[in-house]
Image (cartoon, rainbow, N blue to C red; front, side, top):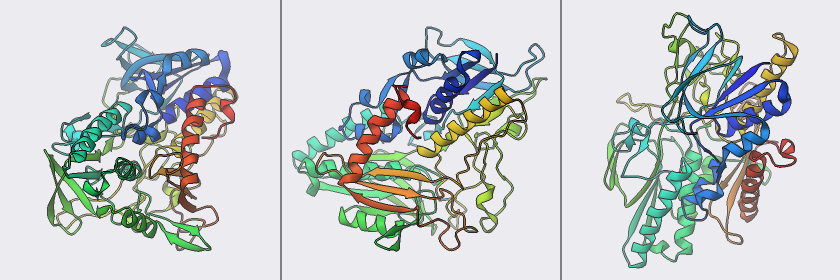
Length: 489
């Protein structure tokens, strides 16, 4: 019997674990190690954050789902990996610390034959003074990165509306809280849901809404922007975003690296090197991401973390990490199999893998401060990668060490994104976008880097209905309800 251990129960880890259990059956064991008791459909957190959904509508308990699937569930966080075993153990293992199941604080060494690192990111609030402490949200801003954070954001947002109904003007500041943030898309959705809810509440005229982001242009989204087919011509995401922001009366400040947060005020540096301040009554700033801090040790107990992980804490995979400067970057630099180059039974999926470099062109201020988005690896790509990694491991177990590894390069992957711009059965809107490939390939598609036959977008009520349907469909799938394997990632 082989044991597959999956670290993390998010989109990528849950996908990998459930498919592996389905394909391997009872002959082998699948173990999920995650500190969370609940699964969270993160794309809908933005609706929780404006009071349009309860957190119970975007989460469910993991234990009964894993019990149904025959998956061993350990509510614990991974601390370190011993990919060579140790002096007292011939098998590789991961050390975990329990956070629940009546074992909180206890440690255990969990042996494995194959390990999938799908831990996702550490929400690195501590990277910006005043944004938070370590991975903990601070008191000055709110977040929609977790269901609990989003519920808190909704409470604070409701307080602002109450003040506005009494005639008090409020300023809303939404965007990124550091010069190297990703997930601009989540902040994009949130700012327009804020604007939509203020209109519904009849207080829009008392609101100043400000976007702040490390993007060098609106519509970059950490993928270098895109051009999409609209009405027979190629329209840029920059034109699309600027039109939407202008139409909704949202001001924007871009190329801004937030470097300090105080009560009612953020400090930032612009790409031209100038410093500035922006006031707020309500602020939702996405924190930067980092690896969760896993350590690695060899058989002798020596620290080999730098061998297994990149400096940012994400796991090294089959990517080209020595591509050099931006002019040398190619789509082929991006990983295909997500196998660790040193330890062949280690894989990383979703946000947990270390990308070879950003997708957007890196930029810095004259002061040497990097201010540009890091590459997104969330949502649909995370699910696709998790499924591909699970498929590879199942084949390795069933067919032997020479089995073909399945590939899911983001440079050969299309992705669909439905970005909400306001929730409502008849007045909601969302931007429905497809992009192919996610990582632009300028050798295959000179000029734009993407295939316009598969890269297009529209905004409207239909997009909102699609996002609402997807919310229910993916929660249905994640609960392993009948037919779940037929629903695509």
